Length: 361
Image 1: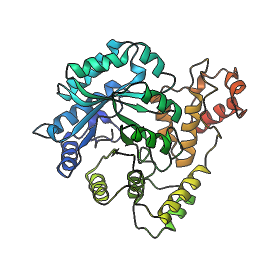
Image 2 (image 1 turned 180 degrees about the horizontal axis):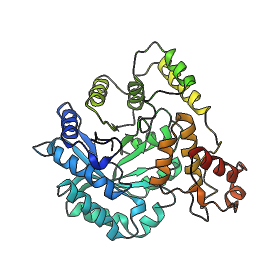
Image 3 (image 1 turned 30 degrees about the vertical axis):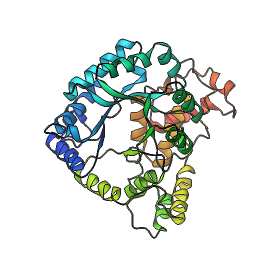
Image 4 (image 1 turned 135 degrees about the horizontal axis):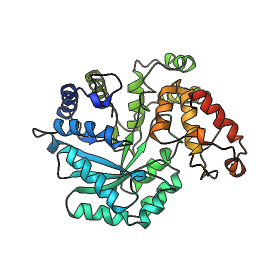
């Protein structure tokens, strides 16, 4: 998702030659799983997939397992599924992929997808060879994950966001453990939380890292933590430069499950605590407050707001609100969410503070 570009911040200006060099370097040194990323915006996603398709020419396609995602929010009918799948395959220049993931399944969208017969559509795509295996990406509570896994016995892959900041964050370490126990391959995405865990941290977090005798980079700490979980099959990290992939490959050569020492885990726990003390809203994302009459995903907005404060990264938070179509400025102060909040939070006030903090009007 963050391939090198000729113009900073513009995925439409990908440096194709450098991107191909980076991807092939990784494959030459053992990378065997390529994830085409989450297509929030198909128009912006197209150039990324086309470049990956070029990189996988000359025999490289046969050396990797390839996964594409069809976002749940793009599927209003079975035809939408086919349209997205066929479009991505065309951009890729391929007749099929190894894994097709239904993207970001939640308690809100899964019942509707199941009712419209999306599982039959997946099986049809398997029968005609466009996909080999079915999976899903997930961002919701552990119990919802269990329900989705139990609903279909042909899931192969479960993809979740996981980093040392997500141990208890939906679905968390317990969700990963459960999926692995059910025989699914677990793909951990965003081990760096979109680069937030590799950039210069707030001072209180920097002091925690400084007390560790380890001479690991922040990227190495993040990767070693993810690979330490025995339920994780593979980690997917965005790498935008040759220096990044070289560093990550070096870590991969020695990282193993259950390999962090107790002092290492204490250090990571202290870092996590230092970050969390910077949170603004004490929202547990339990979601009884939803749905919002105005369509605002209030718990998700609070999560984005908290992350902006924790990582001192307002720019990413604003872009996430746009990408995920979360508009807190649409709040009419009806206080429907407050009436249903289990913690009796002044949610309307927090929405206003969050808008101000992120500069949203």
